[in-house]
Image (tube, rainbow, N blue to C red; front, side, top):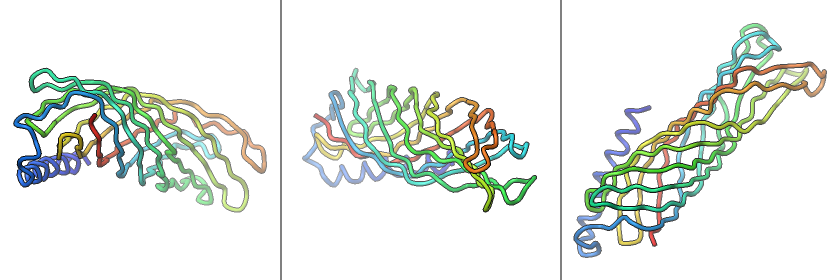
Length: 226
């Protein structure tokens, strides 16, 4: 996963340099990254959500993945070639699948789903003219659901907001004075929580303990700079 993300970012930087060299004359001698920006992003994400479940007395290990997309807004400050500033992003997530089939009772399957996540943080980068390489860190919130199905008998689902640390890295490339494209890789660990409830049909008490969601996302971005 890390090698794939690094390869994608390196490829993006190379493509960026190629595109801007073909568009010579549209850029000033040294691109100025400072100022506000707003944009859209889309990509794919993978997650690991582990939790202990009392209904079958075992640890469920689920791996949802799927499309993510949303937007971001931020502000860049620039000192020589160093670029830094705050950024807020929000993403819708359609991450499902990766079910865990119970080892105790094969008729039972557990799952998890990311429905959305948001990150408030900052970026620190180094600009080489119109190419910006950066790292990002911030606080992330995510809407996550865990669920279980007893085939033909019963089921449960529980949603909760989780919060934790997000870190990442990326590359942005300015194509014109007010437009940039880029790639970003983000990893977020949302800590752990315990969820309790009753199943929908038989009203059985259950506890999903130490629910620990971790997210890996690769997104392509496009920003408009003011």
